[in-house]
Image 1: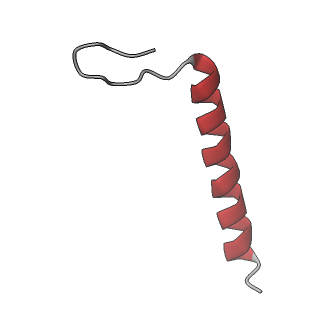
Image 2 (image 1 turned 45 degrees about the vertical axis):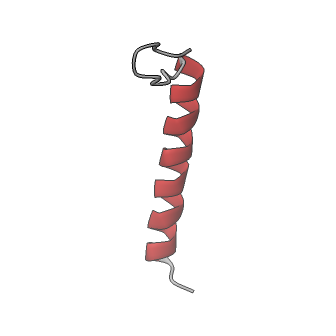
Amino acid sequence: MYESRTGRRWLSAAEVDRVGYLANARAVLEFLAAEHPS
């Protein structure tokens, strides 16, 4: 869905959930990597 004046794309609820999930998963992986350096 686009906002016509600016061309800004508004995220759907599913997209927001996906982005939030991916960001959270990345944060967890970075935390684990910091806790257990190889």
